[in-house]
Every structure is written in C-alpha cells, then in structure tokens.
Length: 346
Image (tube, rainbow, N blue to C red):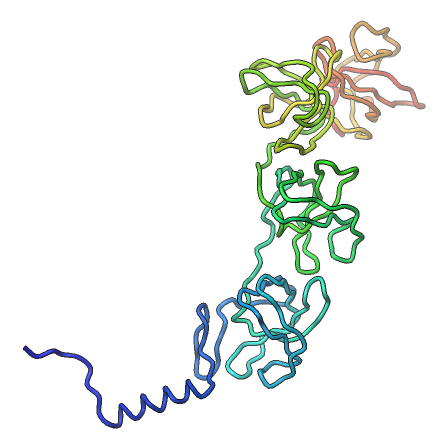
C-alpha cells in the first residue's frame, strides 16, 4: 500500500531549516488574537485614542518609544488599566500604542497585542449592584483626581443614581449605598449586578405583587417590621430609592396618608402616577378646585382655583381620602393643599 503525503526536495528542507533557525534566532511569534502580515504583527482590536484598555498578559514592558529597542520605563502587570493616547505605530513586528497608566499617570508605549478593550456602560440608573473587590474607593466625583470620601467593601450593595461617566480609564457610576452618609462615585469595573431597573418615582402609585410584604421602619432588613401589606394593596411612593441588603427600598404612604414605612421595591408594580416633583410648575385642570388648609377633605376650604391657574408644587405627595395631595404656591404668593388628580404639568 502506498501512503500519499508531503514530499520534500533537498531545497525545500533547506528552506524549512532556514525558517526555523530564523524564528529561533529571536523573531517574536504573533500571540493568539493577532495575525502576522509580512514582518508586522497586527493586533485585531484597532484601539482608538481615549479608549480604556487592560493588560491581558504580563509582565508587559512600557517603553520610551514604539519599538523593542527603546528603553523600558516601566513594567505592567496583567489587569493594569491604561488609556490609549495615540497610535498605532509599527515597529519590530508589533503595533504600538502610546498610553497613560491609570492611577499612576506614567506614560509610554506598549505592544497592542497584549491589550484588551474594556467594555463600558454596563449598568443603568436604577440598577442595584454590589462590590466585587476587597475594598473600593468612593470618590466625590467621577475620576481618580477627586477626593476619596469613603471605602466600600466586598459584597456591599449600592443603587446606581448617575452615570456612566468615562474618566481616567474607568467607567464611573454614582451610588447611593448601604452605610454611606452621602452618595459617591465608584469605578464600575469593580461592581457586579444584583438586580436591574424597576425604579419608581416619588408620587407614583404602586401595588404589592406578592402574597405579603413587610413594611419596615427604615430601608433595610435590619429595621423593625411595623406592618404588613397583602397582595394588591396600594400605596404612594414618598421617598427613595435606597439600596440595602440586596433590595431597592422605597418609603410609601398608605392608609389615607396616616401611615408610612419602607418596603422592598422588588415586590411592587407600577399602578399609576399623579406624581409631581417639588418646585415643579403645574396648572389646574378642573373648572373649580378647592384649596384646603391641609392634605385631606376634612380640612377647611381656604380658597378656590379656576381652570388654568398656574402654581408651583412646594410639598407632597400625601395620600388621604382617596386623593394624592400637594401643597401649592400660587398668586401673591398664597399657599394651600389641593388634590393632585386635578393638576397637570406645565
């Protein structure tokens, strides 16, 4: 039986030996994720100026110029974040990028084949997230140049209230978080997702979507249970959202406005909105609207407003007697409470 396979001439063998010797003599082979074109190793990512990248294979030399013959000005580790400032430049078989090292500020050139792009915009406002690193700096603004105002630790929860903002090689988010006395900005690279969206606004009417729901004295499972809701019970959002213990919490008003407490928003559904914000401009949609001394039909009528009367919300909402009440500032100025169902936004 004859086996068919490659046959080599003496000239072919000599060529193979020369190629092998050339490679062993110091030519650097293209790593995975790159392709060789002629004598240049081209990275397939095509990084651009301003892009955040991460070192995917270290140690990686940071050089004074675009080539292996330039001085080493620093050594980077796998996981280090960089910001691309310029490039690419071809040299010594690589495509080089001029970069800034995040958190240090050092600059230099690195071979692009050892870099990967960092994806941004992973989270949205209203998402509940947790810290994935041992510790995480909380800053006064979105960037490494802002003051560190607090530290978060592994597993600590927070609610995204602003962002994303790209700066200094990171994607930043503002968090309202457990144990924090104020909101602060953190690098999204060190956050993981707990739950998405579902955010309610102050003034929204919500309904319970579970068999029972604990009403607590504060936004967290460590607070005292002060009441219970049943499936379908409705209330009005008066504060929040706050993130704690893996939930997004809202303060709600119920029982004709006589009671309030905190509930986990995960077990609520949107039921309607009469919601207006403080300082929002509104106008009257009823032919004649009673203005009362307080938030409820039991309070004295102190004035009347006609259709189209402009006003500004100064307090509320409060639920009482089947209505959602807001205090208005109107002509001269005068103040009083009206049912929000007869208002519209300007």
